[in-house]
Length: 267
Image (spheres, rainbow, N blue to C red):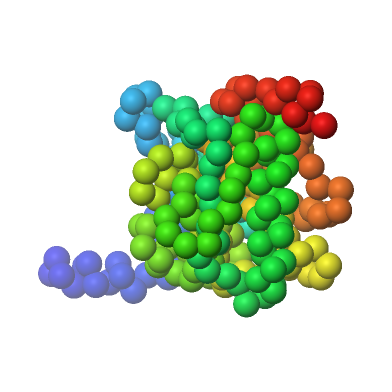
């Protein structure tokens, strides 16, 4: 009899299933599941701060980060944010540094592009990487040197799906790229999803300069910013390569780590 009852319950229409909790805010079940996955990935539980690990607590952290009313309830605006292409690094607050504030101790940081996208000529990728690094080095007493072989401080490449760092890419849209804070091994490395359509800004697609500048900010030690005008804002915005620059928030953050560049060296 018990088995019969259980099977009968399985055959009930989906609409008669248990209702979603209050925190779902009237959103659909697919949106609710997407929100759960998003919060697990970008607002992970922090055992050091002993913050609550419920859906509501994580949602409140996200609402705080994006400067929205803090209700702990899913809203259409939050769903809209969750559906935007973005960086794969979790969010924190304003301009932020990684928890242990890692940074490069050498004044010269090496980098190497180890794999390329089919969407852009190699020379263009090299030029845009150099331009992205120059935007950061203009504000701090740090310079970058490209190497053509061997291991560099920052290894840069394009990949699809699982690519050896436990953070697989997810195909077109959603996560565009990710990077690691300064350190040994994967530290400082920046990876870009080859399933995206990369562009230099002259056609439709994901602007590589904008994305690379963001990811290399992580490679230097910056976390995400909640300032919508900042390069280090987590969600992707269409940017114009010609006039693209760091925001005051980005500059404040990177100078907090490395100090200011003297006017003589900056000009």
